[in-house]
Figure 1 (cartoon, rainbow, N blue to C red):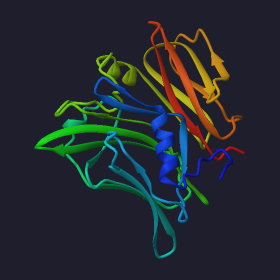
Figure 2: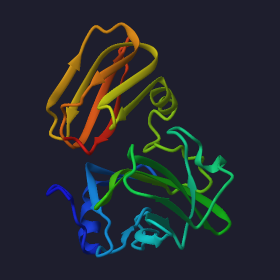
Figure 3: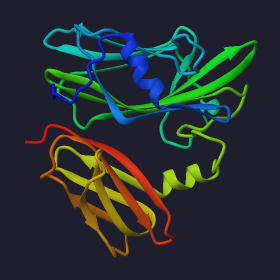
Length: 262
């Protein structure tokens, strides 16, 4: 495990980490893990708890465990809740309340190693006095031999009953812009080839790749194309952000994780 990995050995450290960046935008409680928090999930590690709605109690728990199989050991990360139901989301901008499948836990199990990293979008639903409250959390799971950890991005919870919260929504300002920004540009990094692929519904003017310290490591300008592939095979392991500026001057940002770099 890299020295940058944040090993959370107590609930106190976790609460300290989350509360520093928690803010209440109107009646949407939003937590942005900046910089993204890396949680080492190992057999010797503790379960990780979250108070997603700031009521002083834990609603969400991450647990690490493994299953013995005939020839392999399958690693699994379990996301579970005693107070909320969970649903697996597909894309940013989805209406969480419209989901049809809800469960008390979500388990993801694979042989290791796994490529690419698994990005998870999970929505929550809490029932209080026959009314529903919705929230979401975004994280990436890195699963390699001897390395199994989560990269937490952000989470939100709406305190208004029956409000149709969208996945990725963190305030009531610019709600109509969420779908446009999330669907107009798609970015995907392939850890196998070291290639970052960007595709847009509009013409792309510029792209820029920066690290978590804000340093620009790659830039391409005056592209005049709706797609582009950037060779980032020389980059080291870490979390990066690609900023894309479109022909109408709107800008979007996508986070991606590089692991297994030589």
